[in-house]
Image 1: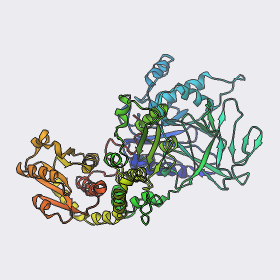
Image 2: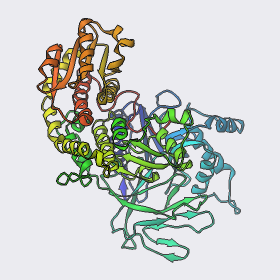
Image 3: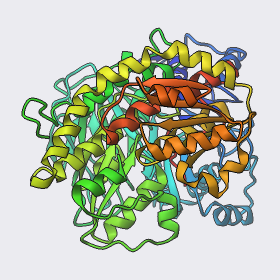
Image 4: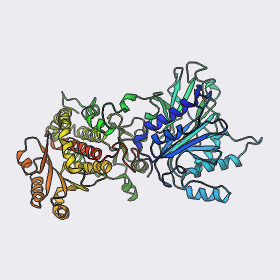
Length: 632
């Protein structure tokens, strides 16, 4: 292990929490080694408030520890209102004998809580997490070795995990096991960063099962398995630190070597030695975990000169769409999202499903089906449950995600990393357009050998080649869109209308407005205007219409104008006839129909950003929302 001062440890924990602020949360806390017992400091609100609460305590920051364990967490409330006592870390009692941080949800906590209440245990919070740490205490007090000594910390945690239902990533510390930390995951992401003064000499770590001897990765004893020795580090006495986190952005400042834990893994660090365990083994389980090297750089997750991460990510889109296409399409030889384009080029029926509704309906899935799972983080809980459902039924599962090493990238049969780069803002921008491009590329690949589609394919590929330059043109209109936002930011509602390929853009644009401005917004299919939405139109209702040289959309525009509506129109550059009908017009470059949605969404992203800024809201961390939804 590495000698560290208490000040360094606390600073590292708080800094890591700041790296994870983009996920959305309502409280934060840390647990660190005190003089006599572990200390826990928790606070409702932002990490900055926690930082001030820490400063208010009389802490000896200079005290050094040869071995140390600290845990911290930003909580998004699922059980119990946001307050200090419901914040994490949760504890097993006033002496902080056991503490835990928990990402996820325990669905059978009521049954376990009643069991513990019957045993005489009392609870101070309303959380499901306190039940977990109290169960650890119960097993510690009731389980002993034959000689009367304490059972291994890992064994206790394994016993507890076996009782839990739901999704979770858990990290435990205890005053009874001062130099140990134990972690477990099921359904929620968890990784271990490895930082050493010596070079790591292996890229795979074996898994231990109950019937095997302990496998250690140790700074002193190296790496043992079945009495054979394999050193993890080039030097026997190498100093080593382990960083447990739910996201690589929390550890990248310290190391780029990480181990991604899988469902039902239990990892333990004791006296500087890391071991990874599983209770049961199935035939499909690999007997190791890879030590991966992250490509992400620290500066990639910093704001730079922008006001917010979301603004930065909007302006990164000329590069992010290129990164999605890089190496996957040859513009010189012309070889190479939408449901509509997939159906057109493959001539196969395509159904778009929300993962939560898909599971509720128990949708029939068969072995000859292909299922796509689209998730920026690759850790979305309901999407992972849908993936498991389809996997059990023998479908071919394809992942589209922005996160290398995520659960979706590991659990699908094949897929695409969109390579958009880290996306910190909760409201997705560049990941959306890169997902769009990735699905277009898939459709092009599926139509590669269809002679009847070659003309259409070449047209789309030319459109993709011109895409980055056209995105830059729209970004240059930022000041004009900001002026439009000044007309709209005090309104209470906003309607967005389009049809064909642009209907999906209206839905996505309405979502952006809802997410960060808290204004009611609704995406409407322009063809349905007369079937209800037209009743909402008057001179006070803001209406944005996407009209791309489409006669039917132009008819809808005229209907809105006839009802004294004041439509803001997003139209093609040079379309004077459409712009003339509009109250205000945003003229954007024209591209092929199936790619127009990539260009049309960018003015709406910018508009949402500026409205939220004018309203004084936190653009990157909107209330009640999280970047990665790891609970159902």
